[in-house]
Image (cartoon, rainbow, N blue to C red; front, side, top):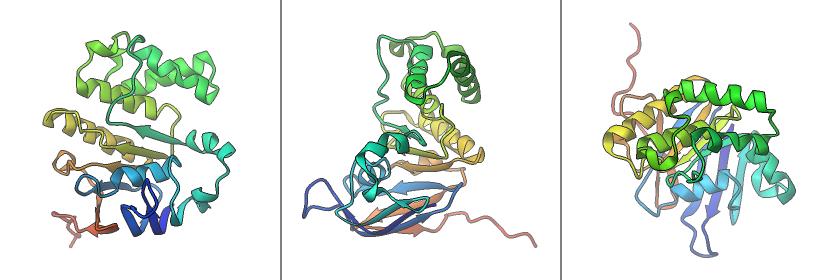
Length: 228
């Protein structure tokens, strides 16, 4: 369970973009955070990664207030989540396999276990044949798939993404959103901050919009029909 209670947050005191924001996300939900640029989507993601603390209010993950989490325990907390960024953050001098292999040093995985996980996630995302390619040999959509593979290497219960389709064409954006849907169906809680509502069309997500510092639910355009 994720819960924001009367959260005020920004990068400088007095300039908060979230002002009294409330939100509840149940385990296993997929939430699409929408809103104009600068309204606080990235701020919310950074609150959940504990890169940023709320100036007021509480940000709770599984009942624990992240604002009260000691700095020394933040790395351990981050090991339990996966994060996908807009700018990929791949090492250009390492191939796909080597980029993913670096994760084992973060999670203290053995070499054989790491190899098994890499093959598993690349197969799940349909990019197993890319493991020898260098980043400059990949399209934008392929790079983002590799980043997604890296984010789920530790089987996170929570997957966060900040504008993951911002640098992609419409077709690649739709493919990435379908993969978030696939991961969500594996039981992972997924929160995607994006202005690209259309890319997620056809998937079953809950849309929450950030506007004027608050977060509100947006009713689905085509709600599921109840059985007679």
